[in-house]
Amino acid sequence: MRLPVIKPDEMTGRQQEIAARIAGRRGAVRGPFQVWLNSPELCERVEALGAFVRWESALPPRLRELSLLIAARHVDAQYSWNAHVAKCVEEGIPQAAVDAIARNETPEFDDPEVRALHKIRNVAFSSNSYIALQKAAVHGRGIALLPVRPAYDDLMNGTLKVLLPELPVPSRSLYAIYGSAARAPRKVEVFLSFLTEWFSANPIPAFDRAS
Image (tube, rainbow, N blue to C red; front, side):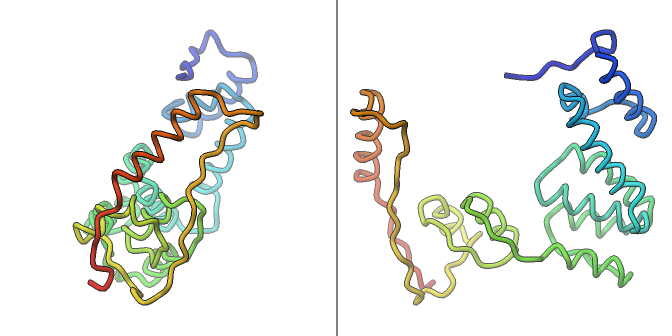
C-alpha cells in the first residue's frame, strides 16, 4: 500500500501547522515529509531532529553537510544525497572528495577536522541481518561472518575474499517459522517440501576457501 500525498486543503489543523513549519525552514514540504505528515506527531519529531542536526548542532556547517553525505551514501539514500551534495561543496568540501564518497572510495582531505570526521564512519557494528553485514563487508567496513550461499557471487567475482580459512565455522540449521497449529496448513507443508527439495538439488558450488 502506498500512502497518499495529503493535499493542503485535506490536512488537519495539526498537519497544516507542521507543514507550515517545514516549509518555513526548508522552502517546501518535499520527499519523505509528505509521507510522514500522515502521522503528524512522528513528522514533527523527525523534522525537529533533522533541523537540529542540519542547522543547530555544534558542528560547523562544512562538517554537518559532510556527515549528511556520508550517511546518505552509506545507506544509498539518493534523495538525501541529492539534497545536500551541492551544499556540501559550497561549504568547502572539495568536489574531488565528494566524488570519491559517491563512488564509495576513500577521499583525500587536507583539513584535519574533516579527515577526522570521515574516519569516524569506520566504527565497527554488529547486526543479526546477513544483508547488512554483507553490505558492510562489500564497502570495506571490516570482516564479516556470512552464509556462503548469499555471498557466493561476491566471492566468485572477487568482491569479497575469504579470510582466516583455517578458522572453524560451526554449521547452523535453517528454520522455517510459521504459526502454531496441531498440523501445519497444506500450503506450508508444500512450501517446506519445496525448500527441502530445492536445497538438496542446488547445493552450494565448491570454491577454494584458501584463495
